[in-house]
Image (tube, rainbow over all chains, first blue to last red; front, side, top):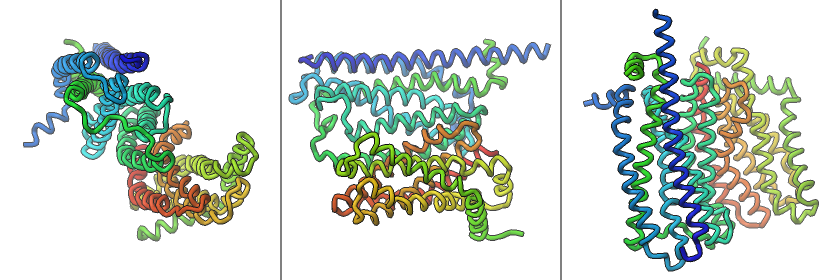
Length: 49
Length: 244
Length: 226
């Protein structure tokens, strides 16, 4: 990297880390919404029965 | 003629379509980012002035572009939701904010890592870096405002309005910062990203831009699904979706 | 009895002004804050007047922004808490009328007083008397613009219990162009250059916010109140 490796690789890694964080947090976000929705459905059912 | 518009506004339709689109967006992102990184880092020739340091552009420019794109999308979705009372718009706006903020941070960090070898310092009050920093503050404001309300519907509307106010402000900030900087520093500031670029350098950059856009589409779809789900917790279609 | 929008605006304006003159401590507190903040800088940096003069426009403008923000927090709060705001909203007048009257009243009480006091602070910071006119004019335009921006923020945070830090977080990024043009107009006047360019931009921002901010602030109020 012509002497610039210590700047190029950290930037690439940081950008990739941001990409990975986005996937991870979007997955977690969706999973949480799903469990909360499931809990709401379960509560509605127990009230019905 | 307007049926597609109404369908677009229907939460179950959005929920299903976002799920169907996500793998395709991820595939496009993997393809484009994979090619862009390999070609940009290994095969593109070094810049005659900046040497290999210019390769940071392959992650810096797409991040900076996404930071603005996500903010604009957030404001437009918020405005649509406010004006036509389309609730899905709030879900899109809420989903876009954290993604955009993360890419703003990426643009700042990669920009300052690029600045160290080029300017001799990690942080220069370059107009682009400064307006990017103010953009990050605008994201912080929108995200904190949404979270500050106990009633999510109110938080949605308040954040949407702030997003619209902010998007009017972004060009003003950029212009004023450019004017301010040219006043203090003269023409010494190096411009990031040159206007003319040979194809061997340009193709990987375009691929990275497309790849980041695909990636944004994919994570936006995932987050929109979460947002729609938590907004529609009480409705019948969510019951079916959860049970199945 | 239905009154026209301009008469309604005048009535609200008069009410706001008489309310704030009845409580002079609230009127004086932001001014004292402005004085104290500007005193901090010579203590923190250096008592050397030549050095202070270089810093003075920035110090003055940052202090003005902060003290103006401090008082805008309560723009709608008192009236929202005791129900006056809802009564005003039910009066049949557009919320913009109320926003315009209250914001102008806020500026007359806080901004104009700050402008009137600025030569005192400016002398202490070593700004030459020749630059006072530009400084005061730019501060007048700037504090009015900030009052408009603050009205949007105050409208958005009025329903929140702990909104004042959030208000700064929202309004300060929006106010950054203001700081740039205002400080550089003052800076140029001190250096003997023409401040016209920066003043034009300040005036443009002022007109722009004066036209759009009442609309945005009334939408914000409707969101948080309904």
